[in-house]
Length: 416
Image (cartoon, rainbow, N blue to C red; front, top):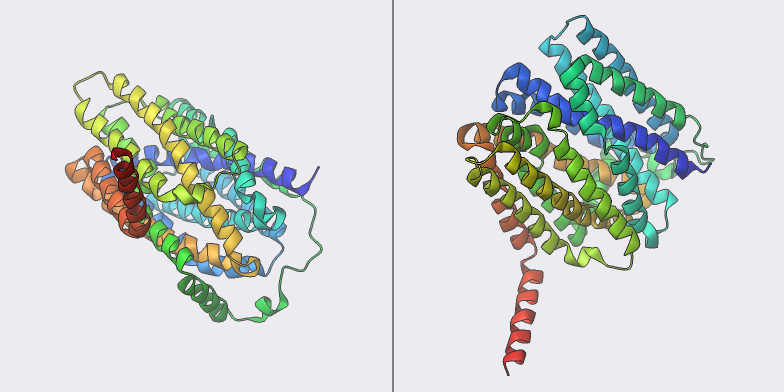
């Protein structure tokens, strides 16, 4: 079996585990705190350490064999889940334990994410990056297809501790598979990079981002968008489906499943249409993505007098559409970074990208949590995505202007 096949199997296991926690954890915290604002505050606190450590992770990963980094990360996640499961079984629901657990899980999950992005660049030809990123997206989402439903079902029947125990087992299996990935003969990369200090490496990464205008634009756009739209799983979706429409937690996982269906379909579409240059249409796809979220918000506002399951069915349809469009944005953007950023600084670049973007995410969750508590999750969803559309139009105003002028010219010629 090839290294990429081992990697895919281990990712399927770890992604399955990673897809359960983001769905179930917010439900448990919301049940414990009974407040969207406190729930947002919890996730802000627990995400900040991993965000602040991300630049150091990027430098650290360059110095070590990637297989060892991944194995260590997955094994640590398994140990953390095992300990937390036992604490919960014995009734230790101390808030400080939950905070520490969430912080450590976020840190080691971030390490896995950075490793994966750089490894794919090493294994895949530049001309096939979009295709294989699409295939990876299909496999990742097939592996987590039933994870949200399983997680919420186990949570509803057996409790949060049983969910964490399942995660521990999955991470152990993922670590076993990683152990079979063949080691690379190289010593970890460019010797010059290894000899540089952390500050030098950090400055090289910043200089590259600052001097490459196309990369800088996407870099800043990702940070701005994460502030407004990255809080759906933690705040917006639970706030609409559970707090407003009082839907049972046992079916809430269908929201993530619907999103995953859209992602899988999108991945297949990208893999079968690898000749299409999706990056040329990324501004339109950004706007379309936010328009779907705006429709979800308006549906929640205007369907409140109807049966809750009528709204939920419409929400699931929009989530499928949202998943499809999201991957049409994410895959070409990731492939663009992988093709344009030199391999010897990619771990630093992706670490800086994650650091900058994820520094915004906790603030966005905190902001969205408090705003949702004041005016409602659905109205907040609408406002946030209208702001996203404004930001995208500002970032791509030259491309939009050229497209609009071409449209007017075409209409004028047709009228003649």
